[in-house]
Length: 86
Image 1 (cartoon, rainbow, N blue to C red):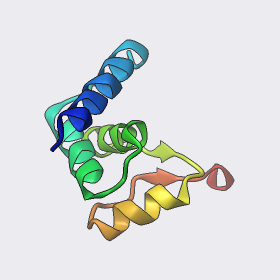
Image 2: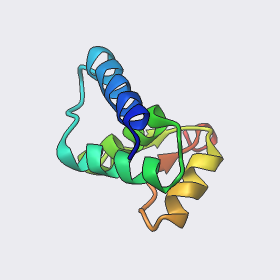
Image 3: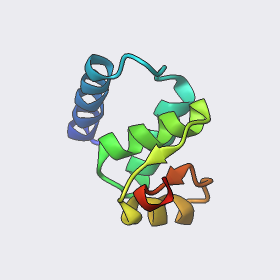
Image 4: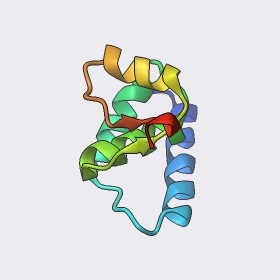
């Protein structure tokens, strides 16, 4: 991992900790987000939201089919729900 990649990860974590007060950001969430990032999905916020949904057993409401496809290709389970399913 490059130094600038680490800076991006840390900045994303700082933003999430500032804005997310209702869910716990645990090691599993961070590990999942990091794995998705290093596998090529560069949207750290999306990666963290997915990691949190996976580690906490939550559904992730999204219209981002690209993220869902990427996650599935990496072998992770789906936690996604789409607006039309509500």
